[in-house]
Length: 318
Image 1: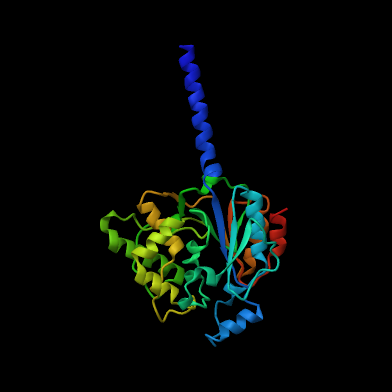
Image 2 (image 1 turned 30 degrees about the horizontal axis):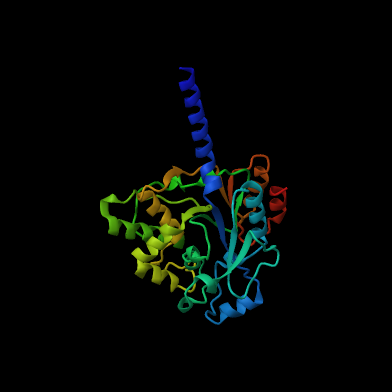
């Protein structure tokens, strides 16, 4: 009897060790960023060759070195990350980043087919990140305004997709009043619903934070919906949030792969957890940030709105 108990204990300990260490030690997880410096004269000249219009959402191209602080937050609070890839236009390179074995620069021309270049549309660019050479099957996609506020484990994100409960799960067709990112997600859901019918998972709005992605799922969607994929990449510029004259037919491949993965029962769908998004378009944003320092969430998104908040970020990474 004692021998049986000892064997059971050994089996339990071995199982516990393997289950807790599997994803971190045996499954590499990379991080991918898309980045642009909208003040770079070389990039501005390149952009102006294709559009003379003044963007009403120029804050999307602003850079206050958020990328630097975001990367440091990943290194500090998620040391299990294998590689960090920074995707940017061919004429740019963030000079405040020390590139090396773990931080690698990827130019648009390395992952975007030549016929679509140049691209100034983040939605189209992020739809190509699965083409990064040697990218791990499992990876996290970050915008440079996304940060980690405290320790994040592999189990917090591995095979998990988070949705925003306040948006509900009732699907409504795309309208002209929808912001572009909402339209993109609705378009992806509509395509999946049309393809798989009643089998498809219920509609949900993914959180605006780092997205857990699988390279294989993104390749599958690229092949399943070639017309939508081609249309998305052919949109050189992102539709302004204030432009309600047209309804975009683009898809967000990073968000769509989340919905597809839930449908395929690869991902577990969970309500948004320990995540805060703050807009810096008004003075309230600064006050909100200062109030977080004593109780940081694991996941934090800060939309800059042309407001420099680097003083807060310096405190975050201390």
